[in-house]
Length: 451
Image 1 (tube, one colour):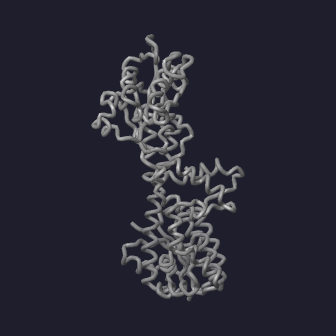
Image 2 (cartoon, rainbow, N blue to C red):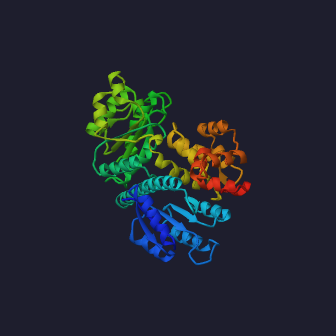
Image 3 (cartoon, rainbow, N blue to C red):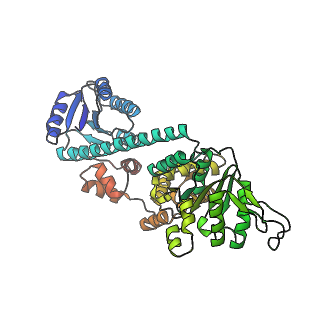
């Protein structure tokens, strides 16, 4: 059941709120001193605190309430707190709003305004607890994966990538080919490294070949090697990637670009472990674990006759699909902070709140590669230590700035919003597109008093 803790030295306040909230099936616990309130918070699961600002007779300074607020915030940083007092001090309200107070109401209160605020904050509290629960669950899963597998420094927080990493670690010891699918720049090579690092051949070489980066006539020579004179310009014999990867892992990126002749030879190596260099009749034997990756639709290529179906099933004993970064937004900020640490030599650059919002809101069509390039550009362009949304150069951020014209709400707009909201700061802040803390800062700066 939803529970509110009322900390007020006047028992009548607790009784009145118990009657008011009981109509909404909200349980009320009461405490008449800061000490009793803090003890109740340790015993019970509380969704919201309503606290007085003065507890001693003839005291109106609000210092006791400030001390209680800070004590609660230190122990329960995400718990919403409504400040309730007969003595209104705007400077205290502003300071505590900056520190995270949810609202500041004067006695006698308006029942409907208080109910609306309490309902909203209880819903927010429940959502915050659920988010915290999921966050803790993911952190435990992350720690468990780190204890079981070598993750090669991979940074991630999303549930989607957690599943990918768990599958990669699980299949690593099986001596079978693995196909990693997903868009360019999403991190397929890092997943291949995790498979290698946890395999039975982890001490062997890890050799990579991008099949899309070479002319089709040279791919076979890269894969299998060539004897001297095998093709124009081949003045001496050279070993191919299979020989170089013997006893380890060969990672074939962009496997969909492999020409049909190379596909046939690759299939034979996968089946027998044997191959010949170009221009040679001598068979060579290797023991290589093949991991391949592609952003192409291989089944569609099979239907078009551009990819061998038998090779596809050989490569696809285990398929690991890596979702694009746009579908795992929980990974964006951890990755951005990692890149910022790597790119900012002095370690002083930090992301502002609006920059973080812009990063999370962006779709990232270029995936992790685009994110790193964006942070690299921002580090160079930012004039101070704070990186703002404009420094990122993201289309969504630019469009947002253009739409608003970069204007701050003026005094008249704020006062009008407060009047329409009946003095409820949370409602006025929402109308203005600000957080409550941001609205309090503007009230303070503009010298706007509230009734």
